[in-house]
Amino acid sequence: MPAENMPMAPLAVDVRRTPSHAAVCVLAGDLDIETLAPAREALDLLLSERPPVLVVDLGRVDFCDSSGLNLLLQTRMAATDEGVAFHLAALSGSVRHLLELTGAKAVFAIHETVDAALAAGG
Image (cartoon, rainbow, N blue to C red; front, side, top):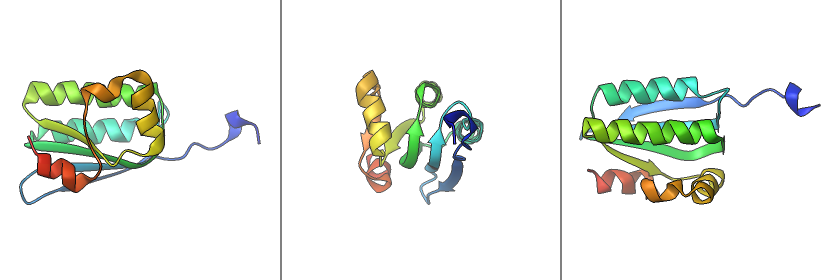
Protein backbone atom coordinates (compact mmCIF):
# COMPACT_ATOMS: atom_id res chain seq x y z
CA MET A 1 0.00 0.00 0.00
CA PRO A 2 1.51 3.40 -0.93
CA ALA A 3 2.32 5.65 2.03
CA GLU A 4 -0.21 8.33 0.99
CA ASN A 5 -3.05 5.80 1.27
CA MET A 6 -2.08 4.37 4.64
CA PRO A 7 -4.48 5.26 7.44
CA MET A 8 -3.08 7.60 10.05
CA ALA A 9 -2.74 6.25 13.57
CA PRO A 10 -5.25 8.14 15.65
CA LEU A 11 -4.13 10.12 18.66
CA ALA A 12 -5.72 9.12 21.94
CA VAL A 13 -5.84 11.74 24.68
CA ASP A 14 -6.53 10.91 28.30
CA VAL A 15 -6.63 13.50 31.06
CA ARG A 16 -6.52 12.90 34.78
CA ARG A 17 -6.17 15.09 37.81
CA THR A 18 -4.27 14.26 40.96
CA PRO A 19 -5.42 14.91 44.54
CA SER A 20 -3.02 17.89 44.56
CA HIS A 21 -4.92 19.35 41.55
CA ALA A 22 -2.09 18.71 39.10
CA ALA A 23 -3.17 17.68 35.61
CA VAL A 24 -1.71 14.81 33.58
CA CYS A 25 -2.36 14.59 29.85
CA VAL A 26 -1.49 11.20 28.37
CA LEU A 27 -0.99 11.12 24.60
CA ALA A 28 -0.87 7.86 22.65
CA GLY A 29 -0.42 7.38 18.91
CA ASP A 30 0.93 9.83 16.36
CA LEU A 31 1.29 13.50 17.29
CA ASP A 32 1.40 15.16 13.90
CA ILE A 33 -0.40 17.72 11.78
CA GLU A 34 -3.17 15.25 10.90
CA THR A 35 -3.93 14.20 14.49
CA LEU A 36 -3.01 17.29 16.50
CA ALA A 37 -6.46 18.74 17.22
CA PRO A 38 -7.46 16.54 20.19
CA ALA A 39 -4.15 17.19 21.95
CA ARG A 40 -4.39 20.95 21.33
CA GLU A 41 -7.95 21.05 22.66
CA ALA A 42 -7.08 19.07 25.78
CA LEU A 43 -3.97 21.11 26.56
CA ASP A 44 -5.76 24.43 25.97
CA LEU A 45 -8.60 23.35 28.26
CA LEU A 46 -6.18 22.21 30.96
CA LEU A 47 -4.26 25.48 30.82
CA SER A 48 -7.51 27.46 31.09
CA GLU A 49 -8.11 25.64 34.40
CA ARG A 50 -4.67 26.79 35.65
CA PRO A 51 -3.56 23.66 37.51
CA PRO A 52 -0.42 24.16 39.60
CA VAL A 53 1.35 21.52 37.48
CA LEU A 54 0.66 20.18 33.98
CA VAL A 55 2.44 16.98 32.96
CA VAL A 56 2.32 15.62 29.41
CA ASP A 57 3.00 11.87 29.30
CA LEU A 58 4.61 11.07 25.94
CA GLY A 59 5.53 7.47 26.62
CA ARG A 60 3.02 6.08 24.11
CA VAL A 61 3.61 8.58 21.30
CA ASP A 62 4.80 6.58 18.31
CA PHE A 63 5.64 9.54 16.08
CA CYS A 64 5.91 13.30 16.54
CA ASP A 65 6.49 15.77 13.73
CA SER A 66 7.34 19.48 13.80
CA SER A 67 3.70 20.45 14.37
CA GLY A 68 3.60 18.22 17.46
CA LEU A 69 6.82 19.76 18.71
CA ASN A 70 5.41 23.22 18.02
CA LEU A 71 2.32 22.37 20.09
CA LEU A 72 4.53 21.32 23.02
CA LEU A 73 6.59 24.50 22.72
CA GLN A 74 3.47 26.70 22.52
CA THR A 75 1.97 24.92 25.52
CA ARG A 76 5.17 25.42 27.51
CA MET A 77 5.13 29.16 26.76
CA ALA A 78 1.43 29.48 27.59
CA ALA A 79 1.95 27.55 30.84
CA THR A 80 4.76 29.91 31.80
CA ASP A 81 2.51 32.90 31.07
CA GLU A 82 -0.23 31.38 33.28
CA GLY A 83 2.14 30.44 36.12
CA VAL A 84 1.62 26.71 35.51
CA ALA A 85 4.62 24.39 35.94
CA PHE A 86 4.93 22.40 32.69
CA HIS A 87 6.70 19.04 32.53
CA LEU A 88 7.17 16.32 29.93
CA ALA A 89 7.36 12.74 31.16
CA ALA A 90 8.20 9.24 29.96
CA LEU A 91 9.40 10.31 26.51
CA SER A 92 9.15 7.63 23.86
CA GLY A 93 12.30 7.01 21.84
CA SER A 94 10.98 8.91 18.82
CA VAL A 95 10.00 11.97 20.88
CA ARG A 96 13.33 11.93 22.75
CA HIS A 97 15.17 11.76 19.41
CA LEU A 98 13.17 14.70 17.99
CA LEU A 99 13.85 16.85 21.05
CA GLU A 100 17.55 16.02 20.94
CA LEU A 101 17.82 16.55 17.18
CA THR A 102 16.14 19.98 17.31
CA GLY A 103 17.76 21.16 20.53
CA ALA A 104 14.32 21.61 22.07
CA LYS A 105 15.24 19.22 24.88
CA ALA A 106 17.02 22.12 26.58
CA VAL A 107 13.84 24.17 27.06
CA PHE A 108 11.65 21.49 28.66
CA ALA A 109 11.56 20.03 32.16
CA ILE A 110 11.81 16.33 31.28
CA HIS A 111 11.32 13.41 33.66
CA GLU A 112 11.62 9.65 33.28
CA THR A 113 8.16 9.02 34.76
CA VAL A 114 4.92 10.87 35.41
CA ASP A 115 5.42 10.31 39.14
CA ALA A 116 8.84 11.97 38.97
CA ALA A 117 7.36 14.93 37.09
CA LEU A 118 4.59 15.29 39.67
CA ALA A 119 7.11 15.04 42.50
CA ALA A 120 9.16 17.84 40.90
CA GLY A 121 6.03 20.01 40.94
CA GLY A 122 6.42 23.68 40.30
